[in-house]
Every structure is written in C-alpha cells, then in structure tokens.
Image 1 (tube, protein in one colour):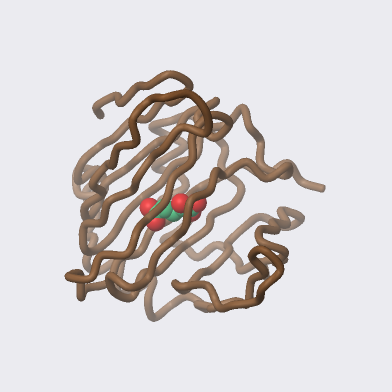
Image 2 (cartoon, helix red, strand yellow; image 1 turned 60 degrees about the vertical axis):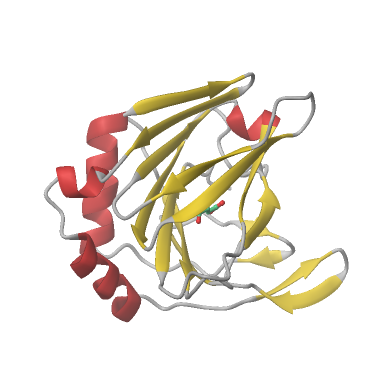
Length: 196
Ligand SMILES: O=C(O)CCC(=O)C(=O)O
C-alpha cells in the first residue's frame, strides 16, 4: 500500500487489493448487484428533497443507526460475502468495523458531492476503509481550510483506500460525474459506529 499524506490527511492506497487476497472482483460485483436491496432514497439538502444520484445500501450490526442529509438509513443484515470482506479488513487493518455503506454508481452521471464522513455517530478515532469494484473513478480531496491543493486518487477495480484519522476533520472528498464513463462501479466504505 502506498501512503498519501498532506497536512491533516492520511491515506493508504492498495491497488487491486481484493485480487491480491484471491477474490474474483467481477463475480463479487455481480453478486452484490443481484443480492442486495439497493435503494435510491429521498434526501434533504439545503431544504430541498431529491433522490440520491446513486443507489445505496446500509449494512450494519444491530443498533448501528446512521443518518445523513436528514435521512435515517434502513439497516440491512451482513451477507456471508460482506462478512468475509469485513474479516479480511480486520486481519489487515486491525479495525473492528460494525457498519458498511455501499454506493452503486450506475454510470458516469451518478456521483457523490463534497462531504466528510464526520457524523457524530461515527467513531472519529477509527479509520474508514473503502473498497472499489468495477470501472475506475476519481475520488477528489480538498482541504476544509488552509491552502493545500485539491487532488484526486483514481480508484480502480479491487482497490483499497484507507482514510485514517484525523482526515475527516480536515479534508472533504467527492466523486464527481464523468460524462464518458458508461460502466458501473460499486464502492463499499466500512465504518465504526458508536452504538446508540
Ligand atoms: O464512492 C466513493 O469512492 C466515495 C464514497 C464516499 O465518499 C462515502 O461513502 O462517503
């Protein structure tokens, strides 16, 4: 894994990490597409309601509620393949992830706006581990203050990106739209929620 460091930001990037663990990423992506209950929830942003420009699924241990943009996510149970991924991440990173947000970008029009994963229910001492499946997309980073330059990390099929504390406090990230991308991508972010 290579380290990407800026003031207040610490990332670790492992290319084709899932393939190195012996996983078939194409099969995994297909199975997640057909096996999970994908939703396109209504969210409220700046007082206006709209559907998220991507599909999502929230998987978590019991009691791990998560709310963003005024939306309480429905909790879906862990499947055997998601438990296997959680086990692999625990083995390599030592973190006890108890929740997982999956985002499914159907093509380059689907996207995620600027934000930090800094909701109060998230444990800010724990890393966030992100796995990518499918077509490569750019994850952009920009500082919340100061004059460090924005930059992007290209996340390809099977990549692992670890965002270590205190990155969420000082930086935001976004997945911008890409007009030329016609293929699908799934991203899985494993998190630690402090149970209510
Ligand atoms: O799709 C991605 O790589 C980014 C996902 C993300 O920003 C998030 O889940 O908070």
